[in-house]
Amino acid sequence: MKTVVITGGTDGIGRALASELLGEGATVIVVGRNPAKGREFLAAADKAGAAGRAWFVTADLSLLAETEKAVAKIRAEFPVIDALVLCARHYRSRRTVTSEGLEENFALFYLSRRLFGQGLVDALAAAEAPVVVNVAGPGAPLDIVRWDDLELRHEYHGGAALGQGGKLNDLLGVAFSERHGGRGIRYVLIHPGVTATGFSGEYDQMTLPHIRSMQANAKPVSAALPPILSVIERPPAAALSAFVEGRGLGVSGPDFDPAAARRLEALTERLLAARRGVRSR
Image (cartoon, rainbow, N blue to C red; front, side, top):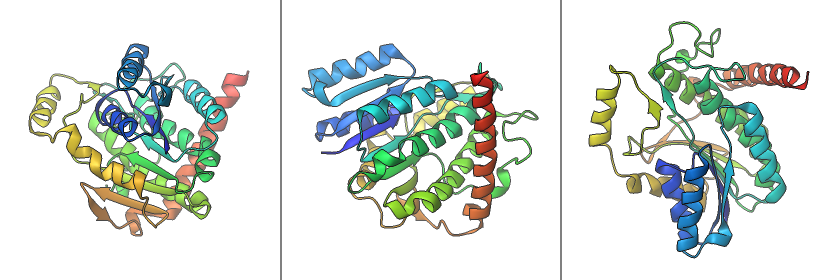
């Protein structure tokens, strides 16, 4: 049976997906920052007779140090991983800087996903049909990326932060598939549509009514699972693919520009190297 890692797996789509996969006989490793929710996940797995296949790793994925520690722990315990599902994100109406000095959306929605993909690549490559499923919002135009202000120090808006984060994940998929697609790892960008999850975030009074409306009209979580389960069970043939509510998107146009992906990768490498240098002092 498959071994699946899910970040952001204690709430919403991630939690529902974890429960479904456990029911199908998979081993599921959930990563989240709330130990109480982790215990709830493990207790539910025990009640369902799946205690031996359910794991929880506590980590605040907005922090590089905790993300890297979680990746190392999973890599040590699970030498073969069939699927990595990236779900963690959190809306903030106000710009928030982590204790490591990074804008939180940038760190959580983009950097943590990059670190998990790169950190678990050997375990993925050891699987028969490995896949990375990045649950984001593929297909936005490339020009929403603020190349000179990736952490939105100027004119911050929560929606803009998530929108840019989704585009950075598109480029992350391009870079990953270019580097690792030859090892048989498939990278799938998925937007399941607006789903009635907890809408994790902190919203100001202007944003909250819109969120309440979205929650009222969103599809149930169960409706978001089939396209994700499908690509875990049968990864696409292409190294990189993207889907919005089951509809395939082309990934060869200008909005998935390999040169832009390499540019982002170079910027990311420099940033991570600088942050590691600070921590090692």
